[in-house]
Length: 363
Image 1: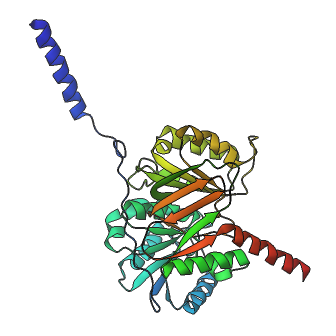
Image 2: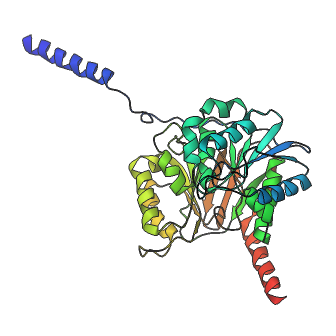
Image 3: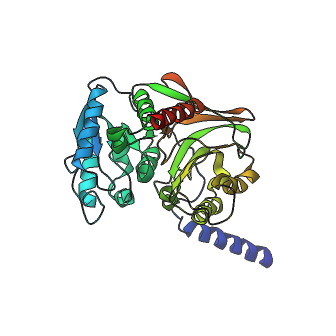
């Protein structure tokens, strides 16, 4: 009896210790994201232009505003746009947060387009509770460093758009940028793209559904195991792009995703553009390197999706339920959200880009 009593005491002690052990924030069972789609825009709707990251000139802001006006919207420029702190920041953390809050809290503003990326949206995370993003769902648009804000929106239960920013809208210096801007405008007005893509030799065949998350790898990796970690949720389709990182840095960051359990929770993965990324490892491509990480999970992999830091940067609805179908003859990528479906064949966009480039060369 004494042995039994002793065993019971040990078991009770262990259970008490477990109960008293602090739970590390961000660990434990993961739940899928459930995000709402903000209302699509109508003619005359106000669209805010803000600089939450690096500095952008007023000249660029005015040029972007002119284009938005030609689309039928009413652009409004953030009160702190044009300010500059140190070498690159678009003002202080307080000034950048103030513009974001101004755009979120004004009920007449229906969408927020970031002027540019760079670095420093990470500074805003602790100053903006997720409940503020959830309180007024509206489209937030950007890519690169804006990945942080898109992740915050998704964790707040609001869809956002990974796509061209105001600096691209202002310039539109190539047919590819023009195509990207047109597709963004169409999406904001309720035309939802259904992407059809050609086969890629590093693709892994399969079909999956999940919630689209991700963006710039070096930007979302620091968000792991935080309250704004969208990629750590269950049942995600992970989109990844990168710029000016060496292959060994990309390998290091992707290994972080593996060790933290992100890859095990993915239903599928989409690799976008890897622009100016130095091959210092020896793989034929980034896609070939990352395929080795992904293959053991038996999930579909789509390579070569035209989104990221190239001129052709197709809009993606982050936080949306999506279906990814990768076949031997190509792939389809569908957003399962309300709206008029628009079939976009990416190969045709590339062909038009090449034809235009050849015509410009001949002139």
